[in-house]
Length: 118
Image 1 (tube, helix red, strand yellow):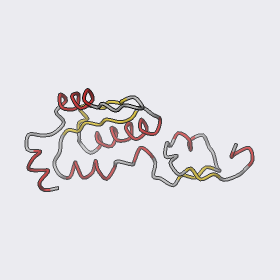
Image 2 (cartoon, rainbow, N blue to C red; image 1 turned 45 degrees about the vertical axis):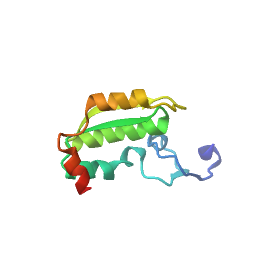
Image 3 (cartoon, rainbow, N blue to C red; image 1 turned 60 degrees about the vertical axis):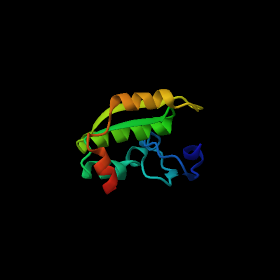
């Protein structure tokens, strides 16, 4: 509709870059691209010596975009993503997801020492 009527639209939470790759000229995002939202956290983890990470996210378009970008960024920074898992919308009991995280063991053996430095 924005292209048809040549009317600008501000998308306050529209950070999924696929929306902008279609050549749309009238949609403007207020956020960084979804793929880059966790870049600072991933950089911090890599600088602090972490080698592995786990990522859980909601099963929706925005969260999947953030997850995909984060997995790629982690790989580029030398972090191994030992788990990337989505949970369904409306989830209130995260015990099964957290069990998966615990089983994947994303922290190095000296994570306690690293946590104290953060």
